[in-house]
Structure formats: structure tokens, C-alpha cells
Image (cartoon, rainbow, N blue to C red; front, side):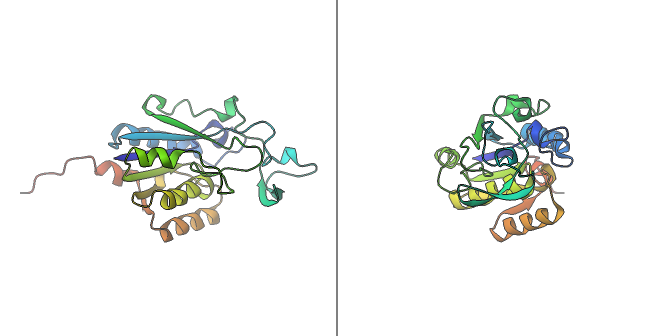
Length: 216
């Protein structure tokens, strides 16, 4: 059972969005081809879905500026611009994403008291989204992960998948993802590699679905 997890391919994380990842929109055609030709049995998309007063927003901390460190529930917290607020266009999945091929949308970040990078659980590692149970129940043996941003939500989703789906093969599709910070991107890939998460490209994935040529 092969599953593709598309992480947060939303307007808010693409150029013009409130928390844009550089060139975030360029992964959409790659994601669409993976969905169409990657031979997946299940396709899941995660969606940041914050209440307007989410505690990770700098606007909720008097005098705080976005992209500075603060605290949330007593824990260190990067303070973000308001983004992906429930029901707004910023929170919508990209309209040029082939939404009809997505079997499940897993929303996250609903609790204003804690941030949620991972598609599997909140950052306090306490509240689960239910995605790991669903994938386990479906018998997923390979999970390919890509999306936005590599150094945050993709990385934490992949690392949690490695922990919570111990019997599955977990892979990160590098060219179907984009990161925010070059140093953070390198650190994220190193962390995933050290956790036995394979780094592959969409070419690798698509080549697996093409019958090999008969030998002479």
C-alpha cells in the first residue's frame, strides 16, 4: 500500500501568500504528476487551519514582530505572520493542485495554544491528528512525503512518520518540496537522512511505475 502525503501546498505558503516559501508554487506541477502517474493507492494532503487568534501569530503578542522568538504555553515559539486562517483564501489548497485526486485532507494547527508543524501531531507531541492511525489501518507500507516547507512542516511530518509508522518505508521527495532557509534546508535533509528517511526525486518515483524494457 503506497501513500503520498502532500504537506501544506496552500496559498499562504506560495508567492503572494502571508507566509510565502520562495518558489513554493513551482512544486504544484510536480505534485500533480506524482498524483497522476506515481501509482499511489492513497493520497493525503495536510492543511494548516489556524483560528484567527492562534498563539503562534506575532499579532497575538504585544510588541512582537514576525520571525522573532517568543513563547507559547511556556515553550519557545517562532512567531509567524498571521497565515492560513480558517476559511480564508490564504488557507485554501492551491487551486492548480489536482484536488480531485486527493483522498483525504488532514487539517492541523487548530488548537490556538500550540503550534503544529507535523501532519501527525502538535508540536507538544501530545495531541495526535489521527493520521498515523488511519495510515496504519490502511496498511500503508510506503509513505512518500513532499510539500512546504522542507525545513519545517515537511521535516517534522517525515520524522514523525518514521517514529509512528515504524514498519513503513518513509521517503522525502526533494524536487517536489521547497524550503525557507538554505541552512535550515540542509539541516532538515541531514535530520531526515539520519532518521533513515530516503531522499528521492520525482523521477525516481515515476520510474518505478514504468515497466522496464525487455532485456536483449
